[in-house]
Structure formats: C-alpha cells, structure tokens
Length: 410
Image (cartoon, rainbow, N blue to C red; front, side, top):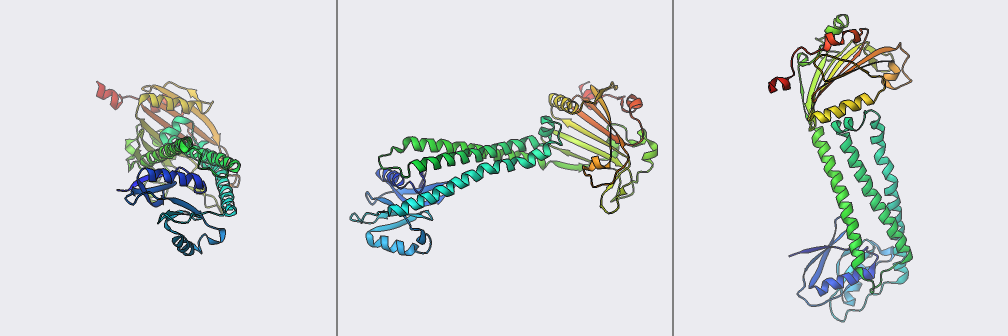
C-alpha cells in the first residue's frame, strides 16, 4: 500500500532532505517515487529489504538534460540506483549495496544551483506580489457602476470581489513567504544534518494550510458566483408589468412604438431568478436614430421598469436605502400603496450617456427616475422623454389593489 508524504524541504536543502529520508527509513519506509502536486509529494511503501541510504545528486549546469543517462550509469557503477527526479537540477538515488561509494556533490556546483534557484524563487515571489494590482483592476473599474455593497451583493459582484481579495491574499502570502525564504537562504545556504527540522516543518505546514484555505475559499466563491450567474432566464409578457406603461404616461410617444418590428425597436421584457432575488425588466424605446459614421444610435425617448423581488424584506430595505444614498438629489414622495417612494430628475445628453467625447453634441434630455418599495419588492421606473411624471405620480403609480403577499396573508 502506497504511503504519501509531503516533502517539507526545498530540493536544494540537500542535507535536510537526506536527513528526512533517513527518518523515513527508520520508520520502515522505502521511497519509490516523487510526484509534483502543489509541491513535492514523496511516495513510500513498506521496506522489506533492510536499512538503506538516500542521497541527492546535484547535476552540473551543462548536464541538466543532456547527460541524464550518463549520470545514472555512473551512479549504478558506484552502487546507487536511480529513484526519481527531485528537480530538473537534482535526482535522488538509493544505495543498492552496503559498500556503495558515498556521493559527494561538488560544492561549487551545489552553490551555483542554490544561487540560481534563489534568484528564480525571489523573482517569482516579486512577480506574484506585482500581479495583485492587476487582479483588482477590472473589479475596481466596474465598481463605479454600482450604487454600493448591496447592489453588488445582489448582482454577485460582491462575492466576485471577495474571491479576488482571497486570491490576492494567496499571492501575497506566497510572495512574502518566498521573499523571506530567499533572504534566509542567503544567510544560510544549507541546512546541516544537525538542524532540527520539526519547527521548520511545522512553520511550512502552517503556510501551506493557509494557502490551501485561501485558494479553496476563492474557488468556492467563484463557484457560487458561477451558479448564480447561470440563473434561469425567461420572457414575460408586457402585460405582466406591475405599473403603468408608456401608453399611460405619454400616449404621443407610445404611438411611435413599433410592436411588429421583430429585430428592431420592439418593446421587450425579460425575467430571471438568482439565489438572492428574482427580477423582471420591461423596456419601451423609441425608434433608433443612427449617428452617421459611428455605427451607434440612440432613442429620443425611452421608458423602462425594473422589478426586483428580493429574498428578505430587510435586504430589500438596505438595497433601497443604498440606492437613495447614491445620489443627493432624490425627493421623497408619498404614493398610495407603497411603503417608500423617491423621485429624481436630472438632465443628460448623448456624450454623457455613452461616456464618449467623440460623439456629436445633442441637446440635453430630461431623465426621471421613480424608486418604489413595497415589502421585499423594489421597483425602479426610468423615463427619458418630454412628459412630466411628477404631477401625476399618484395618479399613475398609486396602488389600487393589495399586493399578492398581502392578499395571501388575508
């Protein structure tokens, strides 16, 4: 039966590796191979051949690959059998007979290999730390489009950001540990056989456990985000909209809507379900006006309704409060049948909407937003056009019938 153990030392800590292998021999184990799985994993089996010795052979720079068979044959003549490759610079041999000639790695070769490994490890550690800002670049770039934490939480971006933070912590711990290890290696190139490995093994084991936890949590949150992003999407009829449509607000603009244009500006409605909420989106846009030479276009008027049924009322309250706090020009209004209602009016233009100074200048458009909450339902109504919503807020959006939740309760 194979027994697997993690090698607690780096390949260039020759004396420590050999001393650790001697300990395994004393426990009745025989090394049969080495696997590289998140570090070096040694594979042992029960030793039935009696005590033996293991030695690490550091190869000269000109023989990493080209002289492999030559080395094996030379070692065989000296009484050693090849076990496995510890690193492309180093192999492990086992004494095939008691009188096997001792392997003595040339000190200059050993020091050159250690210094080369130290430089490579230090460079890799620094690169890991330098990669961290790039991990956050995309996340920070898109954070400006959210109103805050709860907006990101419902969208799934908060978990994605948390996963990015854990991944950054993984790189940071790995990078700092690598730098500290490199500094220690500069002070002490080799661990002698008198070195007590217990504390060093324990320290490195703690680092590995911390790294495994960080990467595990990061992957877990990525899986959660992936499952959430694969929410069920479906189409809903326009008649399911819980508030009035553009026909009630501005019949003149509604008359310009083309319900028969299958691929153009036809009003559309979509819905979906996610772990923390379900949503339905209804949109009515005016005919597209194309901007010559840009391939872009815009609608002179648009009306949209976003309905979010959030899993808990407390989460809905926090989400609503966060959206209100995102802008300082909200005006509180009273609308029949709703727990809370806020109204906002502002102006924008083509360049501001597309965030591009390359587009032609247009006149300012009037934008109006109405934010409503009833229990765990949050409804956002947006309108760009000529009509004025404010004088008719209660007439248009006041509820004249109980919610489905209230009806069920009675």
